[in-house]
Length: 378
Image 1 (cartoon, rainbow, N blue to C red):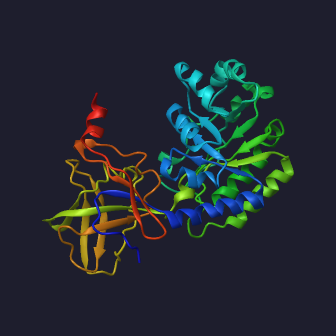
Image 2: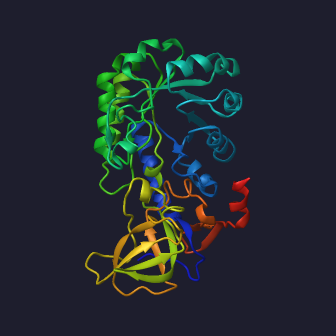
Image 3: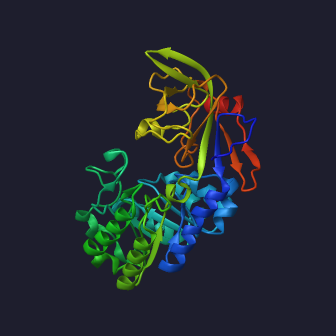
């Protein structure tokens, strides 16, 4: 049974430090047995308060742009990898002071920035993202499928011969979204079959993110075997960039019932919001787990935010006992793509960021107020 301390200021994102450590231990096993590197994808999870812990297990971080690269450089340390579908000229000079590994999306971008990158340091690793043509997005359909038709991600096969292969160190393939081991192994085998001639020209292959390593049912042994076979065949270094896979089921979102409204059904209005605090609930969409609910329980409620957005609905759940004002509702699996995507629509306060330590101690890392809302408005 989950033990959340009382009194508790809500809303709050809460990291379960014990579960996070258990997840990170999985990366140690993969790295040792498969002989690969594993990076933190900060686009999915970026909480500097736990970077000292994660740094002990991981080889570095990967960024999707300048600010994430700076965060990785200043707060995480170790290797900094960065990829963007397109870089602006003004940001490249600073990026080159931060990133050890720089990935490009197209022949045009690589040609444009390669002289600048090589002049900054001949030791920088240069990568190209390729569209593998392998779709295995298990969540959100085409919205979250990097290889969907007309995707902007990665150079497609018909343009591979336009690339300056003598200047490329890394091939980058990111085709997955919350994939099981079948997706991870399938991608590795697909790349080995369809890109063998190009793998022979580089030092490293990066299989990107979307590997949901710590989700129940994910077969770690199958992943390890696939990576080992790939490295044996091609003699290259292998990198994984999981984000969600490192923090899955390792945190919570706590919110409080403000009122019970009735309109055909009972609606519990919360101080937590799908629109502001859990945007993937609406974007994917999906219904996250809630502790203490069960389809067999007798009391159904729609859980909704207090914003003026009509669709600010977190889901419909059944509770064992009637809800009342002041009750705390706890959502599970709430670390990835939550606080990194939140917003202050309607002036809605941002949730606390907190750590639940293994000894039961509850530590608020950061609280937010009016100035955080006001400062974003210019």
